[in-house]
Amino acid sequence: MGWPNAHATGQAVPVIDLGLPEELVATHIREACTGSGFFYVTNHGVPQSLVDDTFQQQRQLFQLPMSEKMAMLQNENNRGYTPFREETLDPVHQTHGDTKEGFYFGREVAADSEESKKPLHGPNQWPDPQRMPHYREVTWQYYEALYGLGMRLLRLLALSLGLPGGYFAPMFDRPMVTLRPLHYSGEVSDPGAGVFGAGAHTDYGMLTILATDDTPGLQIWTGPDVASRSASNISNANSGGGSWGEREGAGAGEEGAATAGGRWRDVEPIAGAFIINLGDMLERWTNGRYRSTLHRVINTSGRERYSIAFFFEPNFDAEVAVLPVCCGPDDPPRYPPTTAGQHLLDKYAATHAGYHGPVKKGQEK
Ligand SMILES: O=C(O)CCC(=O)C(=O)O
Ligand SMILES: [Fe+2]
Image (cartoon, rainbow, N blue to C red; front, side, top):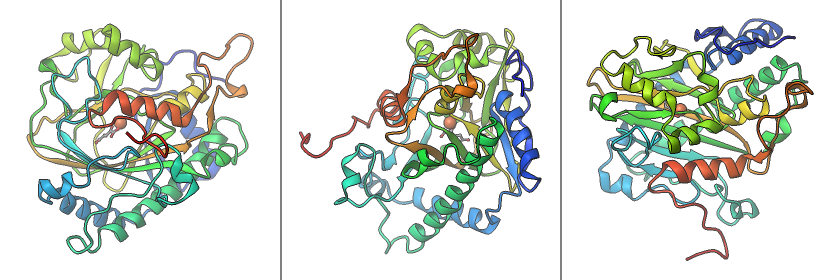
């Protein structure tokens, strides 16, 4: 199997039917992953009624009084509430934090378990069951359904790389899965003035399964140099004023127009489909062949927007090192090995004002 020469090819966000034969799906996934790094999936097996019920529960959760949400504030295990403007995904280009609030829920890890001694592991913070009697049950059902879909995509990704279908599975037997309901305020974004629903960023992990309501807002950066601005280079862009920021300036006021060889492209909601995108860890594993694409959320309508992100990340200790099938004498590894846990800890600390890193047994202040 060959690799495309230039990342400028295949910028579309394809719709992939998971009901087709597995080999064909793997081929479609490979094309999408070397193209825009984003694709939709249909025929995914998650009942629409469950998706609808889950959205309904999230709307109610965000409607709780602020004091109740603040009582569940994000903790050192990255579980809990993140208020409006608390997160700044793109510190160089934002004048204030994202115009969204959110909750993080992870895999449920008992407080007295051995595993809870690891950073980013612990019990969830659930809303009061008397206030929200169905919240936990419905949200957990959704979590489990998306976990199943994540495992299926993991297999398809392995096949798409010419690896055995079970290749990644051992690195996902204690995964750092994070469900993140998001609520964007009605504040209209102003990219030229540094106001965004969610600032431009790449996702940190393996893959993201996103459900949105019918309000548009998600955009991906497509351009010939998109790969060079994602993943590891985003931190360079942040500290050094990345070239894409200059393009943003050039494009201000003409959103969506081509600017200096690249453009922001809308990823419109498609009813019944999930949006899948790849994160930095998969980009590292594949030596940049699969792309962790820069994306952002802008509000052009003045309407509130709800989405639910499901971040499917490897075990804390999983080593993320370039795969032998993705490098060779002419193409040596471009990324040093890291671990999934360290990568996530660094990213959370860099973007969340309220996240101060792990405090584990023996380290309490
Ligand atoms: O809300 C969305 O459409 C995207 C959210 C997102 O990119 C993220 O949470 O990483
Ligand atoms: Fe994202």
